[in-house]
Picture 1 (cartoon, rainbow, N blue to C red):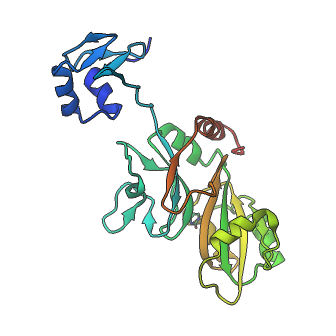
Picture 2: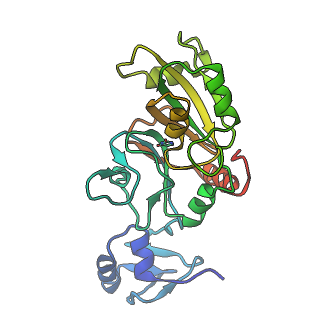
Picture 3: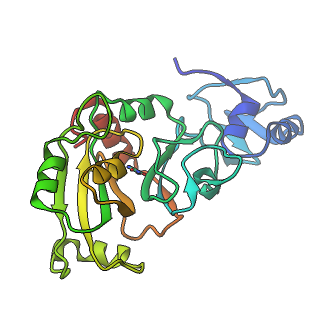
Length: 265
Ligand code: URA
């Protein structure tokens, strides 16, 4: 038996107007349930019912929404903030209860999931799940073999334990890595210091400022940071900074599997 909701709530959730607007439509006789005109906003609707407004079928609002945002620098990952613009201001179809899943720093760019599915967010952020996140990182100075080994084995960032082993892929300075050439073209935009290194860093934790603290622990401050993937989700090439798109049903399913598995794949 599906859950019954009030007709006015059903219509408002489906985006047909505010609660008071849809109440007026109902009272004016513009709404039908299973071809019967209904004038009571409190009338209950179940999944089996066919609802029409002005003769047009009204689809039930999805239970949750999932957006993949390409976060630009300059926005904080919060639902509200007294001083800064928040990532929620980039969402042109906001829904009550939506929030960013985890946090990217104000100056970090890239993949950020926005949803109102609290249970999924909780699973994805749970330290026990080890959902992998890959970052494009640009640091000042040259990363040595010793630095790489420390990052790969686990490093002291001032927590009780060393970080979990990370995956490190250094980019050659001549841009000869064909597989990632498109990525390099899109991120190499700023004035670069004389000595810098670019790498992909994959971590399976989410400690506060983790990437910056890991790189600081090898003495190489981060000068640019962009998240490219989270579990099975990858930042789409065509999604410009500040743009977002809904996840496909398949992506949502993969994400749910990632929240329940240990690798995110
Ligand atoms: N690690 C950081 O240091 N900053 C971010 O925004 C994300 C991961």
